[in-house]
Image (tube, rainbow, N blue to C red; front, side):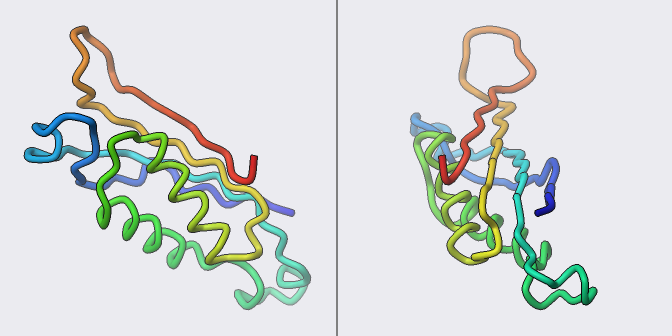
Length: 119
């Protein structure tokens, strides 16, 4: 087993509960920590049988920018499920989504949620 980490991936999207969040959109940041069982791919120094992280990033981007979620928790779960489905070598995914422009009456850097799949 080994880990692939995609750190601080940035996407512009329209997630959130409020209509203004849908209308205006904002930047979201995502980290993915993927536990991978490569079989013997590492022994043979071969991309076959392991996870192409460029393709994994493209899948994450498609999900984050392609559908709207009210909850960033639901977005994180959708990303985790899609990655483990698309890449059977991923045995566990932990997805963290950060929302810097959360509509909160207070001063904060960002709101962050993490979801693990399978649990």
